[in-house]
Image (cartoon, rainbow, N blue to C red; front, side, top):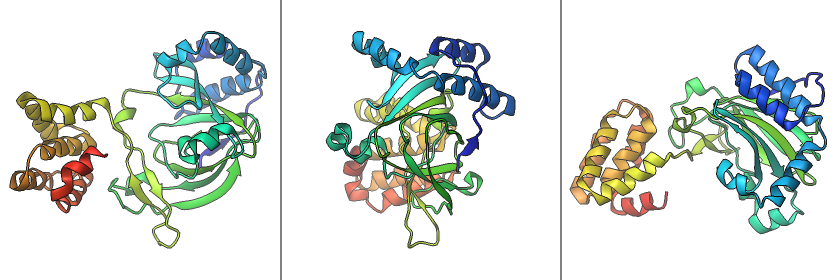
Length: 310
C-alpha cells in the first residue's frame, strides 16, 4: 500500500509560500530528504484551514479562467499551482453517494470502484471531511511485462480511509488502490510529479477477479499521448504520415508507441496487407507489442472498428 507518512510538525503556511518554496527546491519524492521537505510543506498547507476556501472564492469570482489553462483533469480537480520544475499542487474533491455530482456523473467519473496504479508518485493528505476509503494492494512491477490480461499477483494490504491529517506517499508502479466514496464530501491535497517522462509510462487499470489465483490482472492501459493519437490520423491522411508511422513502429524507444504505430498502419490496410503489418509486430523485442499484435491478428476483419473505438 502507499507509504504512511507521519505528518511533521510544521507552522501554518499559505499557498503562495508553499508554492514558492517548492519551486525553489523542486520536488523529489524518492530521496528521504526531498520527501521530508515536501511532507513538511504539505502539512503546513493542510493546517491552513482557510486557504482553500479563499482560493475557491477567488477562482469563482474570476469565473475559473485560470483553471481552463492549468488543469488537464476532471471537474473534481482544482489545480492550485503548476511549476515549470515538473510538479503541481492540487486539491481533489471526493463526492459522497448522496451528492449531486455523484448522482449526475456516476462512480466512474471519480474512479470509484476502478482499481488502478499510477505512473507517477505523489504525496497526499486528507484536508477536509472523512476522506475516501481505499482497498490497498501491492505488486512487483519488475515481475510484470505489461501485457493485457497479465497476472499482477497483487498482495492485499488493508482497507483504510484518508482522514483529515493522514498523509501517504503513493509510489509509481507499486501501489494499487480501489477507491470507495466517502460518507460525505471530502477534499484531499496532493503534490504530484509531472516530469516529461511520465506520459511515456504505462498506467494499469486492474481487473480484480477474486476467483483467480492471480489476484488481479491488467485490464487496460489508459495512458495515450497526443503523438499516438496523431499517428492514427497521419497514417490515414498522407503517405508521409505512413512513413512516419513506419519509423515509429520500427524504432521508437517506447513499446506502447511502437504498438500504436503498428495499429495505425494496420488500420489503413486490408486483408492480407493488414495481416502482414501485424505479423511484423510479432517480431518486436517487447512482450507488450507482441501480445497486442497477436490479439489484433485474432480480430483482423473487425480490426479498424476496434481501433477506432479505443
